[in-house]
Length: 290
Image (tube, rainbow, N blue to C red):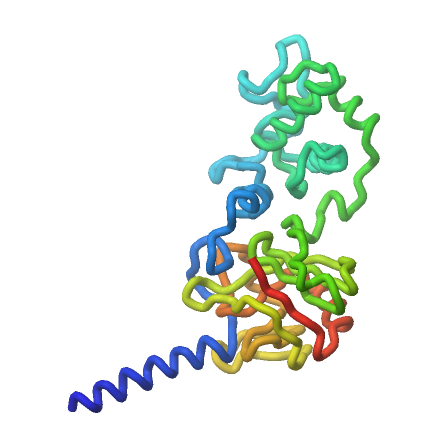
C-alpha cells in the first residue's frame, strides 16, 4: 500500500513537470507582473505596474468634461492665468501635449491622454527651464512655447504600439539573427548583426510556470497553432525551448500584465509579430535574459 502511494505521488509530479514544459497559454488568475522575478528599481519606472501608461490615474477618477477645466488649487497657476490643461484633465489635446513633451525628453512614457502626476511634473520642469511660471498646469504661454520648440506628433507618436522602453541588448544578441528578449524591460528586440530592426512588448510565465532563460534556437514555426495542453490559440508561434514559444496572445492584448503565460513569450502587437514571423527563420537565435 505504501509503495502504491509513492508510485502515485511520483507519477503526479512527473505529469505536472511534463505539462509545464510542453505547452503554454494564458493563466486566468495571476498577480500583476509577467516574469518569475521582480524587475529591478531601474526598470520599475518604465513598466505598467508602476503606472507609466496611466500617469498615476486614480481608479475612481473620471474624465473631466473638457480640457479647459482647471486643476486643484495646488496645481493651478495664479487666478489671473487661465489653464488650458491641468492635473485631472483627459483629452486628445493632453495626448498631444504628452507626445510633444516626449519629443523634448521631458517624458519617457507613452502618451495616454490623461493629465496626471507625471505630466504635471514634466510640464513644471519645462516651465522652470524656459523661464515660465512653474505651476505644472499648461496656460496659453506654456502651450505656445511647447508648440514652438516641438513638431506636430505623428500617429505612432500619439499611440505607439510599444509601451515599454527597450533594454540594452545582452552581449549574446550582438551577432547574427537574434530575438533578444529582456525580462527586465519586458521587450523583444529583433536584431540582425547588432542592429535593432523592430521591437515589441512581451509577457512571460508566472512563478509557477516561468519562461526559461538562456540561449536557444528557433526549432520550428506554426502560423496557426493551438496548445495541446491548454487548448488556447497560439498564432504565429515560434518554438525555441520544448513547448515554449514566442506567439501572439489575445489575452495579453486584452488584459496586459494583469495575467501571465504558462511559460511562453506572449506578444500583444499582432501586426508586428506577423512581420517578425515572416522574417524569422528556423535556426535563428533566441536569447532570454534579465
